[in-house]
Length: 294
Image (cartoon, rainbow, N blue to C red; front, side, top):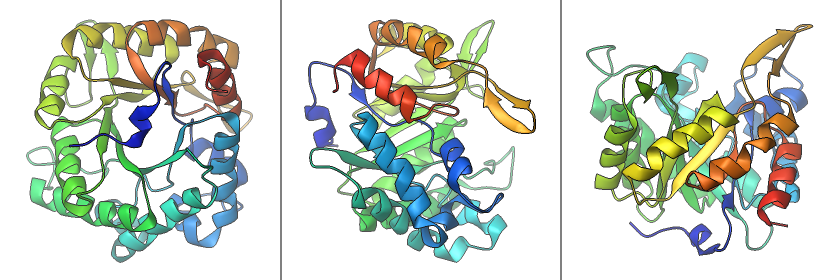
């Protein structure tokens, strides 16, 4: 599978954007709105977040399509509009994409479980991801980013579905890990080496981790993963743990605390970096300066 032109960036880490969901919560007028429906009902709000990340120095932003999958959208009665919503998500990001920058078509988990833990089948999952990928390709995505996966089997369904729905686009993938006494594992018990071998077998141009972990623990994860693979690693940490303060969700790491770990994260093997929940354009702007992206 050929790599995206994104990989033509050399001499420094590639910089992705930060959190989209937590930023959209700040600008969307309707609390509880299905995030993907905002692509049709509030496109300017979505566009403003993408624009802010590009202006901050991100090399690529991710489309507002994490849950634009028929299986995920079923809860909102929107399963039949998955392709439409995915395409709209990418078109919004593309509309503010500067020359030389990129848009990742974002693919997240279905929120359901495969058999025997749940009723889902691998073919059902793969078909849903294929529909989502078709929409992302239609909208003009430069590559696809599968993220926040907690089940390696589902992640591999997403890889297969993405390649079926958008055969011309490179596919990258990230898992979300928890730290245990035995090391880093997903919710379903998938470890770093198991994930590395599976993604290498799929010939992904890059893979890694996002969400859940604060930047220091993500740096530790990179150190554990780097000896296990020669494939470029992706790291997008949370800004610490979420907390409720005065009725608002806030994250426990300050910008200074988060940024202090970025050099170590890069030293430990991250080739593509960005942020996840709780990070903002300000985080990305300071990361861009730190790595020489601006």
